[in-house]
Image 1 (tube, rainbow, N blue to C red):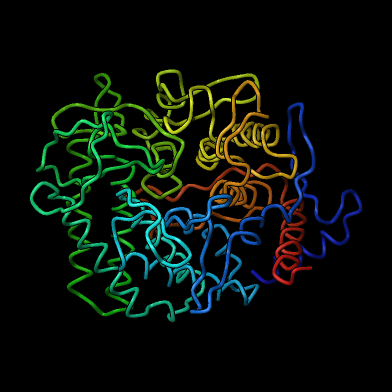
Image 2: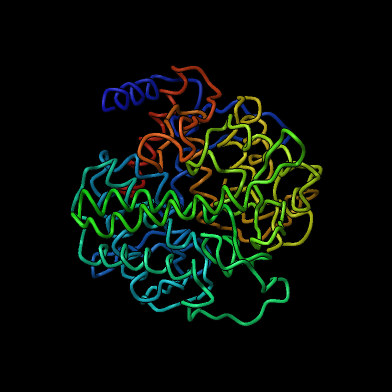
Length: 455
């Protein structure tokens, strides 16, 4: 790894074709400009705040609050650099510690203030899964066992207990939210699936069992089980997490996979467990588009491909196509407003370089003048947008750049293969030759060092 870093820096310094901080990216389209390596670390530079207690508060861009999901997602692309810049490991340990504390304060809250008070209390299954994934990825990258504190252990127990309770929401849960007119209140209480109030977009669910969130919970429970067994030596918690994951997976196979004809099976986005389904996709992750990214299946899985074909088309009412881009939107924003998260998710799970290149070009044509990624934009007028600075999207965009033009491999969320047995973790296709990847790596490492030293 260090040899590759050294070669990348040398090649970057030797290159006379471009500024040392500008990446070599083969973009197409009409609004093309250089991609500055330093812009890839904007959220790391602007949204991470080390607190007096040693924890790290991660603001979600231009909203003064810390979402559990967003904070983990803003951290994950940069964990691969933890062993190169000592200050990073300290910051990331702080994110893990702070999220553990917040979970023990209120496992149903999805966002917290800098003072560890609840900012928003929308119950979303994935809000408890992302912190587990972050702890897992960080430990696998660094072997730093100092993250395994009593507070994180308590958070792990709280996560499993909360998921268990929400499997039996009607008889166990005390969580309530004002009635949402878009939500169907009836559901099958015996599916094995975890009940949810809101989607990753913070919008109310239509049917109580959101499938991508349940899939993501399975992945997190698998990681949690291993950490409970190997690092906390807590066999009871490890076994409970593993058994819960089996229950939820059975529910997905039983209630969330549907045949569209005699041969093609697809995943539903939501179901009530009584035979009613929602066949859509929302740009916010976890979603159906990004199942290979989160580690559920391979990008070549037949059920996934059939699902992807449907949701990335006009069959999905939240898939839009305009003058400047095409991609997933969300009921969180008006019709014809595309989310860059959806474009990035499509690219991360693509199987061809052409699809990745198309996605990167769309992002280059619709981002801000400073290279930052919006929450959403109008597909026929990119100058109309929501949220000028969206930390999650900026970080995931950096992940796409790291993979596609710098040859940095995916950071798996699972122990070695996908949840679907026998399928490998997918890699994002690269766009440039190996030597150019090394040059881009060198520029990225230089930019990271400049950010960490405030040069």
